[in-house]
Image 1: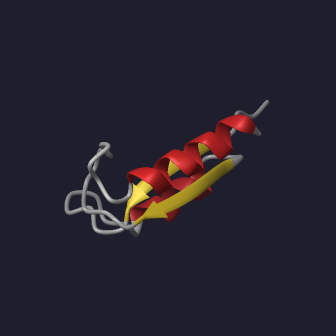
Image 2: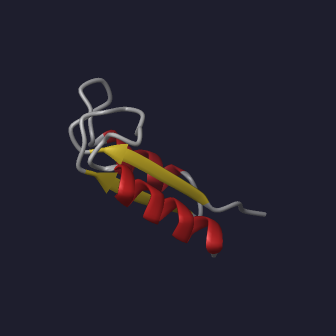
Image 3: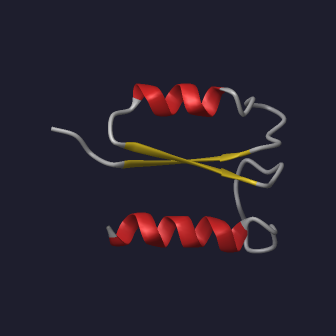
Length: 63
C-alpha cells in the first residue's frame, strides 16, 4: 500500500540544500516534489511563495 506525499522545499533554503529534495522524493513512493522560490523553511502568509504553496497544497489534497 502507498500513500501520496507532497514534498515542498525552498530553492534557497540555507539549512537544507535543495539537492536533497529530489533525493528524498525518489525514496518516497508516490511522492510529488514542489520547489518554491523562497529562502524560508516554513511558509507564512507574508512570504511571496505563499500563494504558490497554497495552490500546490489545495491541488494535492483535491486529488
